[in-house]
Image (cartoon, rainbow, N blue to C red; front, side):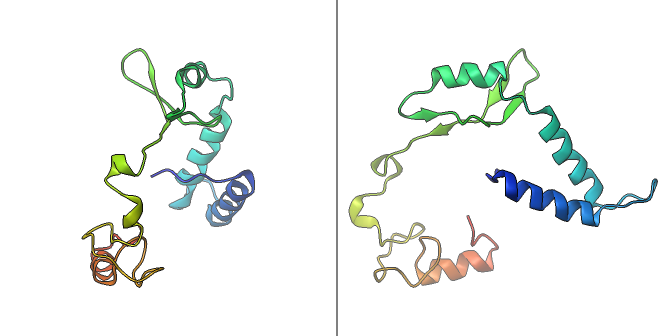
Length: 135
């Protein structure tokens, strides 16, 4: 999962992690490795990464690469670079008339909906029971 945080939000997360990390050598908490991973990722970030730069050169109206896109070196010579691909509603099977249709079953519901996250009430309830209410 990817979560886009601004600098202030990252600092709040780091502060929360620091507050839960151990201050005693040899007595780490479960938060220490998470804190360390965030710190390493921030320290290793290179805004001029050549893979990100190459990906940005390939970008077009339907493929976008952010300035802070994730770069993940592969086992082969090269790296994966995070990118956004634009998908039109019709490509996703969504027509303009289906704005008030459940994304799971297609049932139309009242303007504004009674469900959650693009679902009708029944599918929203089912998704919540299955623990997937936020997908």
